[in-house]
Amino acid sequence: MTGLTNHGDELTAKLFELLQQLAPRAKRVLALSSGLGASEHDVRAGARTAANAYCLTLIEAFAESAWQLPAVEERCARERCEAVVSMLHPNLFSFRRDVVALAARLRIPAHTEQ
Image (cartoon, rainbow, N blue to C red; front, top):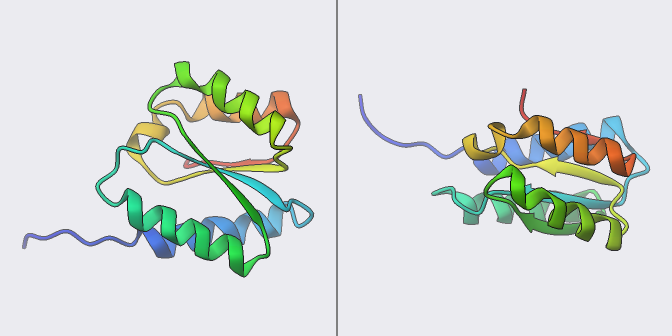
């Protein structure tokens, strides 16, 4: 069997649902992505839809590697982010600990892949 299935929008919606359960007061959410995924457009659209459904202000940011996270952290502080959601992508998975550390420094909740 061959083929490609994209469940990104469904999984993205689930990430936001979990975030609402973990941090119900968070209203300004940074959605972090690598910008490299084949389904990036769909995942981003799913994030926007989920953010609207939960009345969240979505702040979109991109990082292809951990060395770009300081700029993301600066933006998150400037935009007064109250939580971080790391979009589902293998590239982000490789530096998920750095994303968690970023959120810890900002003292905000983060949801990343395990």
